[in-house]
Structures are given as C-alpha cells and as structure tokens.
Amino acid sequence: MTDVTPGDQPVDEAILDTLEDREAAEAAYQQLLERAGEQAVEPRLAATARAVELLGDPQHAARVIHVTGTNGKGSTARLIETLLRSHGLRTGLLTSPHVDRVNERIMIDGEPVSDEAFARNWADVSPFLELVDAELEADGQRRLTFFEAITVLAFAIFADAPVDVQVLEVGMGGRWDSTNVADADVAVFTPIALDHTNRLGATIEAIAGEKAGIIKTGSRVVSAEQSDEARHVIQSAAVELGCPVQWEGESFRVDDAMVAVGGLMVTLSTAAGHKDPTPLPLMGRHQANNAALAVAAVEALLGSDDQGIAADVLADGFALATSPGRLEVIGNDPVVIVDAAHNPHAAHALAEGIREWFQPEGVQIVLGLLQGKDARGVIEQLQGLVDTVVVTESDTERAMPADELAAIATDVLGDEAVIVEPHLLEAVEIARERASDKDQPVLVTGSITLLGSVIRHAKEEMWIRR
Image 1 (cartoon, rainbow, N blue to C red):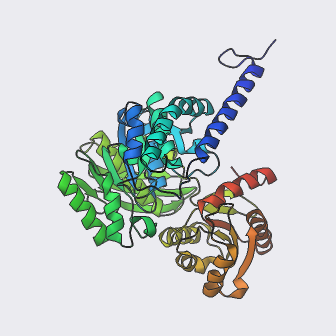
Image 2: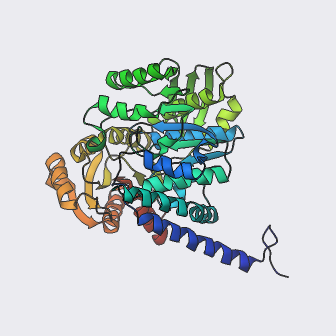
Image 3: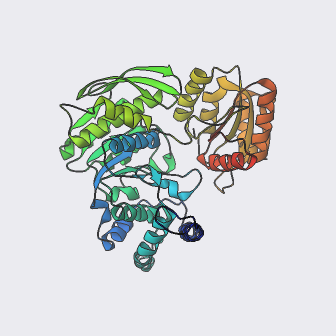
C-alpha cells in the first residue's frame, strides 16, 4: 500500500514538490541578493511606493501595527504578533534581518512563509519590480535595493495569504524606511538611542525625528519610556497630526517582573486595567517592558480601553512568545547563548540578563561587530562578565576586522583577556573548550551576522539545543 500525505498525494511526489519549492525559493533569494544590500540604504520612499502602486497597493489590504525604535523592535513585534494570534486573528509579521533562512523575515500566523508562497509571489512581483527598476535607472537612480524589494514581496505575500493584521518592524529609521508605505493604525516606539548615526543623525533628536515619521493621520501612538529629547519629538509629531499618545509609566507600566523557570512572571497595568501575574518565556527584565509595550499596542489596535486583553488570551499570547537571537540558549555542556547586542544599550541589557539568569563567575565571549558600531561602548558594557573574549569576524564585507576589534578590546580589558581568531567557527570552538574547562557559559554576541553561522555550525556538529 502506498503511503500518502494528508492531501492524498504520494509521499515521493510530495517530497519532489517540496524540493522544487525549496529550489525555487532559493533562486528567488539569489535574485534578491543581486540587488544592493541592506547596507546600501536609500533615503527614499517613492521607489517602494511606486512598486506597491503597480501591484494595487497590497499594503492597505490589512490593518497595520508599525514598530520602530533602536532596541527591542524585533522582540516587541513578535510579542504583538503572538497576542494578535491569541485573539484568533490571522497575522503577517515582517522583521529583519534573518538568522538562518530568508523566509524567517516574512511570517504568516507565526510560521516562516512557505517556500512555495515565497517563490510564487516572487514570480508575481518580479515583473513589476523590473518596471520600477527601469524607471529609476532612466532617472539616474539606483534600482530597487534588497530591502525595498523584499518589503514589496512581503506586502504581496500578506495580501495573498490573506492576513487580518500586518506587524511591521522598521528596518532603519522610519520616515523613509520602505515599510513606511503602509499607514500605521498603531505606531509603536521602543527605546530610542544613538545608532546608525551616519544615516539617521548624530543626536537623539535627529534620530527620533526620523523614527517619528511612521506616525500618520489616524494613528494611535504607543511609546516606551524615552529620554526627554526623544519624547518631545514624538509628542510634537503626534500633536501635529492629532494622534493620541500612550506613554510607558503613565498609560501603561510593568508592575513587577520576577525571574521564573524559563523566563519571567510579569505583572502589568495598562489603560484598560491591571493584569494578573502571567508567565513570559523570555529571559531579560527588558522583555517585561517589551511585553507591556506590546500589550498596550494590541489594546490600542483593538480599541479595548474598557476591558483589555482577557487573562486567558494574554497567557496564550505570552506562551507563544519567542525571541530568536535574544538571550537564546542554543547549546548545553557547555551552555552556549547567542544574542545580537550590537550597540551599548543592547549590550547593557544583555549583561544584566546574563548575570540574573546564569549568575556566572565568568563568561567566554565570542565577539564580532560590523564596521561603524560603537565597539568600545559594547565591550565596556560586557566588561564585568568577561573571563576571555575571543575576537572574530563574520563572513561579510561589513565586518570589523578582528585585529581592529581586538585592539579596542585589549585597550579596555588588557592583553590576557583577549584572544584573536578571525575564523568564526574556530573562535566558537576555542570558547567552548575554555568554557568546558572552567565550567562557564559561552556567549556569542555582537553582529547578528554571526548568529546564523554559529547556529548552522551547532546543527552540523550536533550540539545544538533547539
């Protein structure tokens, strides 16, 4: 008797179809990679707007929660998505960058978009992208970049699904980010700090001004606690457009966040009322703040100021929460933690989380950063954890050379605390061996470009915990 799939398709045919879909998705990704990379950011919105216009403006097919800020964007966006899903809504989530496969950037109901849908929608949108490319080149401009093109693809995939709500994480800034062709029903601001200063400006005010560009007429605004400079900018933009603002610490807050098995026990209050203690399977007290922001954003979208999110729905949404590449344990014996802390603000939160959850006497750190990052600031925040730092670099032209990063690390930590190993996977194995000898954890951190390579290596060597 021939085995069949649930759809009554013979197993061998189903496998062939799956392989064909994977090949088609990989081919689509390679075509995307032929475009200018994410480091080649274009401060423009008209090009993406033209592309979605030709497609019938799919970004307007569902409601939008738009998330910007400096740190915590991805975690907050994911929490928003799980809370929406726990209400029975069909969700689309766009985040960046990906850790392993590009499909991770575009999620439908909490799962990476299928290879079949990725490839099919790419085939549909490609001719329109090429039309826009030709118009741009005729005008002396660069054709659509990788990020512009994949944002258009995501909107097409969400409309095709279709979804009820789109949760969009800004790639960089806000005002001219490609995701900003969508109009936010709820504009969400995570904490704003100095980052990407060469693109967004050298002051908090300038950076906040770029991020405040996601506020549109009719938006509800929900913001984490901000510096006085950032708050003034966000408030001014909201007032100008007549948009109400909810601030953390005023309209909503974290009442308590206690360390619990596998994460936190979080107690919150929002404009809709008090929330009973609820388990949140994420590590790091900053995740409690992200959770409060996410709850406030979802209640703002659903207009539930009177009743708020029900206790069972909140518990279901939190239970689904994940935050890949954020205080994520991927290996045991020794414990290996990955976290993409690429600026001092994120590194501070990471250091606090490591101390609270693991209480180590020392940590073997594998560190690699991209050029232009505040390497000294990151290292200074991690300084109190360090037994040894193995300085390395990821396989990208944007990586800070290991020798250059090592010079900064040595200046902060001293010669004896720094090992230089440019080859990432060898650096990880050096750290794992030292950690095993000293009964310490390994922390792989810095650029998110490190994490995917390390996770694939862990799978190949069969020490991954996932």
